[in-house]
Length: 93
Image (cartoon, rainbow, N blue to C red; front, top):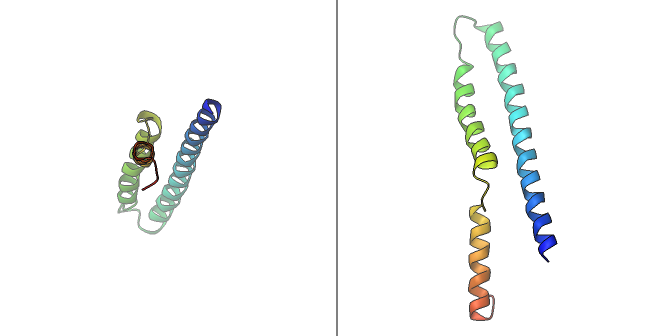
């Protein structure tokens, strides 16, 4: 049982890292596209900086969640609490 639990945690961490990689790749591609459009259509005004900054904050928060705060997620904590409550009362409700 412990082996399955370790595997499941490793799978979730790998999925989180893959999700961040995809998010970062899409971010870079879209920001580059917006920068090209901006520079070709209105080079006197750098409007692409606004989505860059807004989405950039989301990228940083995503990175912090994946690479710094490695503890259990809120959902996992809630599941554990419900399981403990069910075990204490002897049933799911």
